[in-house]
Image 1 (cartoon, one colour):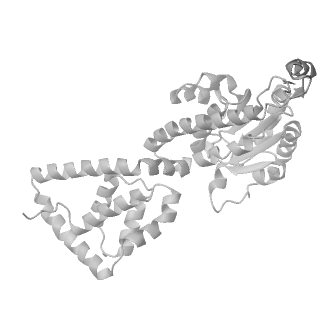
Image 2 (cartoon, helix red, strand yellow; image 1 turned 90 degrees about the vertical axis):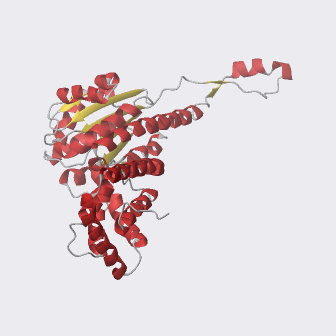
Image 3 (cartoon, rainbow, N blue to C red; image 1 turned 120 degrees about the horizontal axis):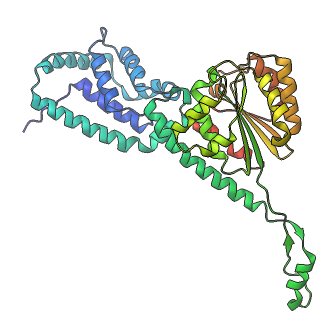
Length: 378
């Protein structure tokens, strides 16, 4: 019995190509495949280079995907241009015939599409999580954002457990309790085999977080807010603030947030949300109103900002210098630093860089999780 293929040779190769990309970590669903198949009918000059342009546009969802795509395409589409032109020509002829396809064949095609979707989900499950961890927050789709939020909460909990475990291990030593040591060793004739210690009740470190919610940070603010909410479960005291043109204290609100919808209350309280950035004035307000109770030699300050400041640079340097002097460590996470070509050329970022102890990217989930190793010794 002869098997009838529902797809042209080119369509079959495109489906196989999509499957290959899924195995390599790209998330390519049935809708993207259908879009590419439709787009191939519009290619005037049937060359591999033109197909590469089409598939790269429709199959790539992040900068990481774009960086790897050309190599993956070349590895899969091997063969000379004559064979490729033949596939394109056959595909074009078959598409004209398919305009009169019966409803029965359409139903069969739908079933094949559903099987392809199922295969996509099974193959790309673990790879999808890896891709989400590496994807820049600003490039996430709405569906990806929901999945990333679930994944992030799970990974943040694991990070908090590891931090707590290490903290307990480093809190075992203390001052020798001579009286208890003598009592414990009376039965051994006075030999000091078992030592007893008197420990001070350990206190978890303190953290101060300042999040930039200006317009240039709009695509990152939600995810960074979630990160702040997660790490506060580990630290004994977390004082959190939003800033743009004004400073807003939000620690009390963060404790009450249970869902994404609750973040709306934060945006309503924060003055200047999605506006400009005057970091110097905001840090000055922090020093005048909150530094006395928020900062100490046990405090670590984390600033989440792209450093694109429009305020006075002298004020910025002076006020951040005061924060640096009062705190134990100053960490700055900049989403723009996730770009390969990033240089701290903005005047605000450049002027404060010498004061910063740790300067890292904060553009995706992996970069936020890397902060764990900088908090271990806090």
